Image (cartoon, rainbow, N blue to C red; front, top):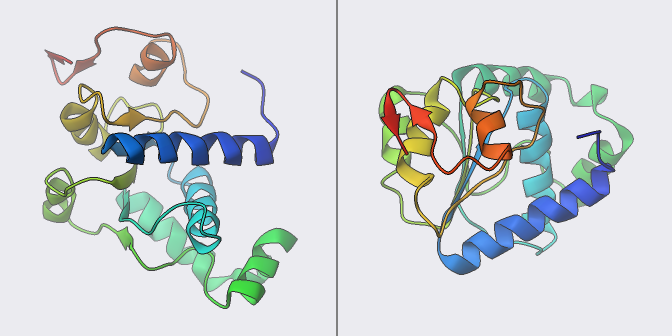
Length: 177
């Protein structure tokens, strides 16, 4: 699909999260570690800060995304006008808020799936074919309360593309889900 208006994408994402919370599920977002993850964290920060969503755990589970976010945090002077205004008005960082957990270890990553909903898991890889997100998909893709949100372009032949195309089952590490 072509790029959407950012504010419409924000509203759509917020509404999907709200519906998932209402069902008692988790939101799993396969996201690219550079750029997209930080956009999602900032959007969730806005939603929670402005009372559009309740406080809940938000896990960023990608070693690369955690490292890249650290670079973003060291250079807030490079943020766009909207982000800078949010920092000034909210009086807290754009990429950090209560309930946000940057997952460091593999053991922490495994524990996320045992955490009671609601929760949001942002994890790489963006096309859902490898990385930690595969384990989160294995635990949640079959749960009718939970939602997998695809937030970026998906190449043909990837798990992410299969999800967009409405596949009834997906193959994760040789198993059908």
